[in-house]
Image (cartoon, rainbow, N blue to C red; front, side):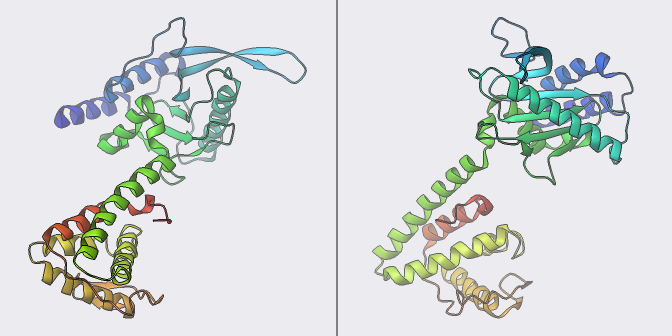
Length: 315
């Protein structure tokens, strides 16, 4: 499936790159093609008005009057999409201003939806043939929509659709938008890691290591995994150290002890063949490890594979 999806992405990009036709003549075709690329169903008008182009909406004004509007593309419980065909270049002030206006328009539509439907978690702003921008508000309480997943990566250029992870992000917005809520992801990751580390702690205590030594050892492991994921250590260095020596747990723990000694002082660490920062909070002042067996090393490796930036500090 992957090569077929990649070919489809290349075809989509080639077709729409630099398209010059107007928004009216291109928007719906572009979005239908995007649905095909993502492998999701295409919009269709029905009595429920749950997933359709040109979804009618009514704005209620403070003076008691009302006015009509239409959402370019709406999927209930998922998103309001506003589509444009901007003439300004993507790196110009005019482009930024136009995107801001389109976002404000989409947010106004989201707020005007009937209370029975609730506000969708996502706003999508599309500049046909150039960009897709994502904004999210997962509480669905009327708070401000903010760039998703963050201000540095909420803009998806047409060429970015070559990346499987970008297509998967958009697919989930269509099909499982709330699964992208960072709070849910944080809870899921924390729960999985806590389960593995609890199993490791129980096995170490069963081997007659004191709870205090076990807690100190796991705390150093936890911090090392977090430091690796937030790039205070070289990427995957801790996990690779464990994987490399997994079949010789004694060597793995010796190398881990060396790494912790180096983290306490800073400088070059032969354990990972790289320089490390100095961590001077005294956590690594006593870099004692514990004798682990192969299954216990495996539990640490599984925990290290998690995205530690999502882990709740309470762990």
